[in-house]
Figure 1 (tube, rainbow, N blue to C red):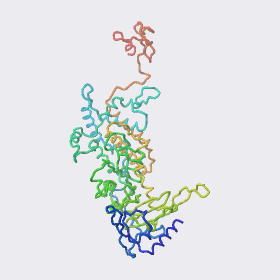
Figure 2: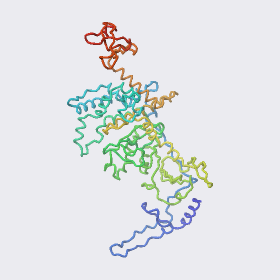
Figure 3: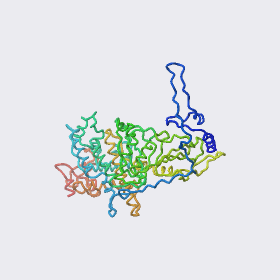
Length: 570
C-alpha cells in the first residue's frame, strides 16, 4: 500500500545522518540519502559565470526532527476553550416584550438615521434641481413610501423599474402606482444622498492627501449600521469571517475582482458572521491596497482584516473562529490565542510557518480517508486525503480525533457505491461552521432590494437595507424559537414589513374626504364620441344633451350655464 511503501523509504533513510534544509528548498530536490553529502564547490567554465555553490551545514544525527504522525499516534489533549462571552449570546432585546416586524426593522434603520438621509437628500436635491424644475422638499412620509417600494421590488421582480408603472391591463401592477408616481420615485432615486453635500465638497478638496476619505458619502449610515448590528445581537461560540461581494459594474476605484466568486465584480466587504444563524455581526468595506496594510511588518491584508473584526472586549473570550485559506496563518492563530480566541481553518501548504519536513508526510498516492498530523506547540497541522489533499490548521483540536464521512467511490467493477471514510474532526467542524457568512449572503440574495444605479453610494444604501431586513428577520426567528413559537419565513416577514410600512404611511397622510363606494358614485359619460350625434332628451330641462349619468343611466345636461347633472343628484 501507499503507507507501507512510504514507511520503507523512511526506514531506509533513518539510519543515515540527516541534514536540515532551508524552507525555500524545492521539494523536487534529490533523494534524502543523497542530500546527506556536503555539496562540493562547483565553478563554471566561464570566468564571469563561475561562482561558488553554497554548502549545507552539517547536522548532528542526535538532533530531534519534526515528523508527521499517523492517525493512530497519540496526541496531547489541548485545553478546551473556556467560553466567557461579555453578554448572553442571542438577541439583546427585552425578553418579556413583543416586537412587531416594523419595530425589529427600525432597530437597524431608525427614525434618526432616516431623518439624516432626508435632510441630506433635500439638500442635494435643492443643489441639483435649479431653474424651471425646482426641487420640492420631501417629507418623512415620502421617504417611508420610497423605502416601502424598494422592499416591494425585492419581492416582485420585473425586467425594468419602469415596468412597475405600466398602463397595460395585462401587465399592470397596481400597488406601486397607489404608493407614488413613477416620476416621484425616479426623482427621489436620483437625489438620494446619505451624507451632507457640504462635507462631500470639503472632502473632494482633500483628494490626493492622507485626509481624503473614500467612504465619505456613505459614512453616516455605514457607521450607524455597524453599531446597530453589534448592539442588538451577541454571537454564539462559533463564528466565521469571510468576504462578501456586492455586485456592481460601476467604474469606481472601490470595485474589486474575485475570480472564483459567483459575483466576480463588485464591492468587497469583510464580514464577521454568526455560524449558528448567519447574523451579520460586524463588517467593513475594503478600500483598496495601501502601503500600511500590504507591508510584511503588518502581516498583510488577511491578518489585518481578521484583527479589525475581532473585538475581544465586546465579544468576550473563548470564541472559536473559522476562516478559509485566505486568512489562515500560524502567525494569525498565535496572536488570536493571546486574545483567548481559538482558530480553525483551511491553510495553504506554501504558507509561511507551515511545516516543511517530509518525514512521514502524507504520500501523494495515499488512499482516500488517510490523514497525517503534526503539532508545533499550540498549533495542529493536518493533511487529509479526499479527492485531493486538504490542509488544515487548528488551535483547539486533537490530531487523533476523527469521525466518518460518506463518499461515493467507484469499485473495481465500475459501479459506484457509498463508503464511510475516516475524516479528522477539525475538517468536520470546519465544514459545519465555516458557512456563517455564506448563510447570510444566501438570505440576502433571495429577495435582495439591490438594483442598478449610476451612483456608487446608492448601491451601499440598498445593501444596508438588505442587511437591516435579514438581521431583523434573524432576531424574529431567535425570539420566536425562544418562546416556542413558529417563526415566519423570510418571504412572510418581508410581506408583513411592507404591510406595516404601508399602514405607517397611511397613518401619516393628512385627512381627506372619504371616497364613496363605486356603486354610489355618479360620473358623467357621453353617448357617442361626437357630441353632435347621439343626443338624448334631458330628464330635468327637456333639452337635447350628449351626456348621461353612468350610475343612474339618465340623460342630463352638464354645462356651466345648464348644470342639470348636479340638480338631478341633489
